[in-house]
Image (cartoon, rainbow, N blue to C red; front, side, top):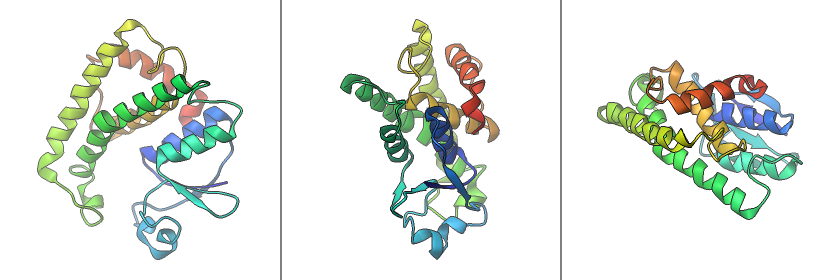
Length: 203
């Protein structure tokens, strides 16, 4: 399978997830800064113009990070979703919570401020919303920190899941674009350090 890959947290999620599964993907790098993902050749594969995109052996394209990761999980003998219906539901619940309440505000906070020069010609941007979105992300991280005060090792308890990979890659990106995590989030900080030393984090 081919993964159309680029800079940024979303491709990192898929690469790290695949590495945890032991799944090898052929990487095809797309120049995001140059807008290669908005050119006809790429849009023919993924009309949404998003990265990453996974090309299957039959030429079919899958986009959207969670859809790609769930597909890879189903092909693998290892699972980061869960072994039972309730475990899979818990993983999806937490991944959804983190995506909507932390990751999307963090990303849009970047797109509307530090990343404005890149994104203002590619999407509707709201610069006046940037600081508020960054505060939302930090507020929801504070909430998550409280949830993790019970001593759990991972987001969904004692098992590594897609939720951990998703949040780690987003927070790693945030650290690099002016949205470092508050030092008050001590429980998340300990979790983050455990994630950072996993070999898959360098994928």
